[in-house]
Amino acid sequence: MDWGRTGLTMAEESSQYIGPIVLLGPPGAGKGTQSKRIAEYCGIPQISTGEILRENVQQRTELGRLAKDVMARGELVPDKLVCDMVAGRLQKPDCHRGFILDGFPRTEAQALWLDQFFDNSKLSKCLPIVIRIDVDYNTLTRRLTGRRTCPTCGRIYNIHSRPPQVDTLCDVDGSKLVIRDDDRDEVIFERLAAYDRQTKPVAEYYAAKGRLIAVNGDQSVDQVTSQLFRVIESRAATVADRN
Ligand code: AP5
Ligand code: MG
Image (cartoon, rainbow, N blue to C red; front, top):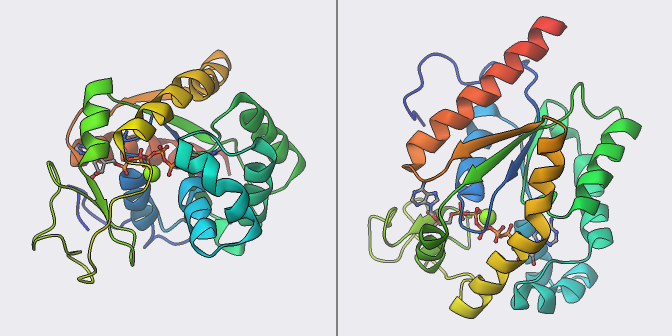
């Protein structure tokens, strides 16, 4: 892990408080790719609602049964189910120095729920930093159709921009890479439409409160990572100064 950084990573400075981070952005913006890097660099968990839901579908849990068809159509899973799932995950002890919410909140109701959750719980010393990764529509569709994922370690590849070293196998563990069920053209279209309809207002909700930071995601993965690290480090320094 380098990404142009020097000195100790924030994970090595394991006492440093990072705080909650919300990553917004359309399907294919790079939320998962960047969350994994932030998680590794900062030593805090990535909480991807999409990944947790896919695990539930795969394990055939009750939640997975309720979410499966909705996800296959590219629509959003009902707020109550997702909020309860997130509430359970945030209670785990690995969240105490901070966490990254990847793909949550995704509706205005979820954003309101999250603010209330922070008000009512002693989970965090500060409100989340909310970062939206902006990417052009045509780039998104190309990224989604080219995405391949390792079913074992979750590493994300792209046949155009981040191909694996060997054929269609994961560089880390050699597993055969897979295409996500919802990365078919017709479902991609519906996911992008759901983003416009239901998730754009979430960014507006945070913008109206002066809490939205937009980052240009139409750059290389490393360049996007650098922008995100700058934002996160600056917030961590502010929280440290206050305490
Ligand atoms: P989810 O899994 O969250 O999917 P999504 O939001 O559609 O986003 P993606 O995971 O497709 O994209 P990403 O931004 O993570 O991009 P990635 O890093 O992979 O949700 C799936 C479904 O679950 C939803 O449709 C819904 O049904 C349900 N759901 C989830 N959360 C919910 C919620 N809160 N409420 C209700 N329902 C919910 O990158 C994409 C590709 O681009 C990769 O191949 C990557 O290698 C490549 N790439 C990334 N960055 C770059 C770059 N800078 N340059 C070139 N290539 C890049
Ligand atoms: Mg993702």
